[in-house]
Amino acid sequence: MFSRVYLDWNATAPLRAEARAAVSSALEAAGNPSSVHTEGRAARKLVEDARTQLAHAIGTKVDAVVFTSGGTEANAQALTPGWSLSGRACARLIVSAIEHPSVLSGGRFAPADVSQAPVTRDGVLDLDKLRALLSAGGPALVSIMLANNETGALQPVEDAARIVREAGGVLHVDAVQALGRVPLNAAALGADLLTLSAHKIGGPKGVGALVVCNGNLHLPQALIRGGGQERSRRAGTENVAGIAGFGAAAAAAHIKGAAETSHMLRLRDRLEKGLATIDGAVVFSAAVPRLPNTTLFALKGIRAETAVIALDLEGVAVSSGAACSSGKVQPSHVLAAMGVEAELSRGAIRISTGYATKEGDIDRALETWRKLSGVLRKT
Ligand code: PLP
Image 1 (cartoon, rainbow, N blue to C red):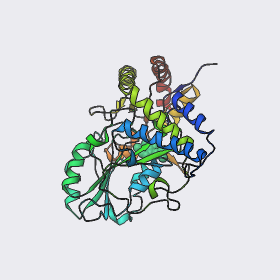
Image 2 (image 1 turned 90 degrees about the horizontal axis):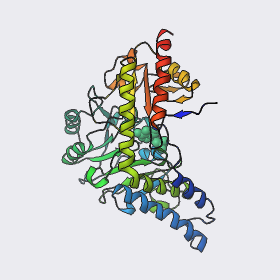
Image 3 (image 1 turned 120 degrees about the horizontal axis):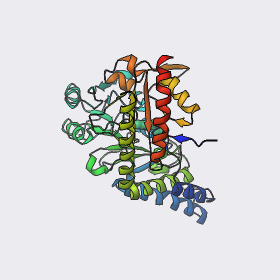
Image 4 (image 1 turned 90 degrees about the vertical axis):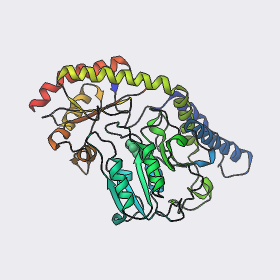
């Protein structure tokens, strides 16, 4: 029996030991955080301690953090018409063409009020096009990811923040893939709103946060209304154990951040050097700053979905750049936006690592790929 190699950390990261301990201890808390008695206050403390841990990890005010059921809900909440900084409410939305589907969907904006800002061939937001879109109408909410989940390409968020601010708009940044992988300071970034998710940093699945970094912003309309939890910004009894796990994971990722990032960078170099010697696969966004843990590569003539299954049978878990929904494999919208030809994009495979990935895991993936790629090319 051989051990498995998990190289799909951008899909989800294994639970960190610190998060597991925090979740299991919080599961013992009997009270509802809204209750005033001792049990309730103990549960409230777990939620508030986690809020402090997360705020500290990203350099923001504690009361800026609104816990949600994940990155998808935080994005849906952010994409609400009516945010305002300039006295005029944002009635339209501009998203980059490479956003996660939860942003591309446009949230609560009518489809006619949503426009897409294109990216360069390297998969980086085109700032001139963003400027042009902003000047072609009233104040806009702009949503840009900090790091792309497929290519890992880092986006020019600080420059975009200046451009959006000058145009009287509001900037939302989906930082789900960046947290824990590159230094993230909310104040330095200049984002007004930030989306985070616990399970990409080794926290539990099903918990995330919308961070309202700009204290002058007021939520126009809560997505989930009901009780007054999260200062009426997100109703519903808090996921106490999930939130405690998120806080613990954020604190651990923050403390170990620099060491983990350089470890992932070393692994990425090892992988990409190895790939180049096998068959000269194309690595996407290779010429621009990328996440230290992500390599999206393709080989002409290969079907990624077949390759992913073949690698899985050999014990190596990776993912394809294509999305499979309703039984139909869709080519990656990210690679399409970058102008990659469909034939190459169909062969895109993503390898993403984490702090616990070992050099031996990379070598095993390379060995397996060396064995399979020639065969897969012929099928
Ligand atoms: N945004 C990005 C960039 C993502 O990669 C993901 C998940 O893959 C999400 C948002 C959604 O986060 P969640 O899985 O917590 O809903």
